[in-house]
Length: 105
Image (cartoon, rainbow, N blue to C red; front, side):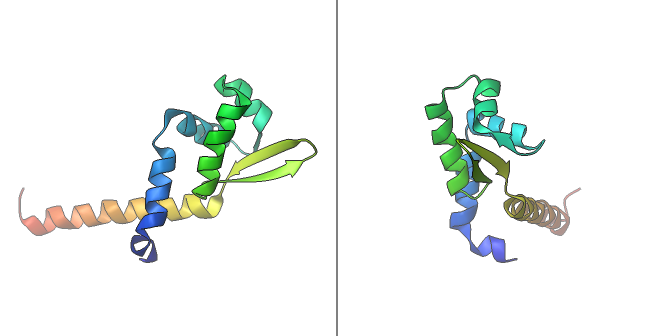
């Protein structure tokens, strides 16, 4: 699978997700696109602090943004979510193969 051949991309995903605030953002975006002002209220975080975390998620390709007037709206990037899921599935399937190949019960 091509994803395994891109360890830098995978490392960016896991680095971006290795923070409670960023995980909270991702959790809230699971329901759909959200305005940065709503995320600020939901997470009880300042806009500058949230901007830092959103930039990290955006740089990793996990979220996308769009501007409407003075507000910025964020959403999960469906292509990245699919690629991450595929990568995790390869880990799970490979670990099952190793257990089966070892002959241990």
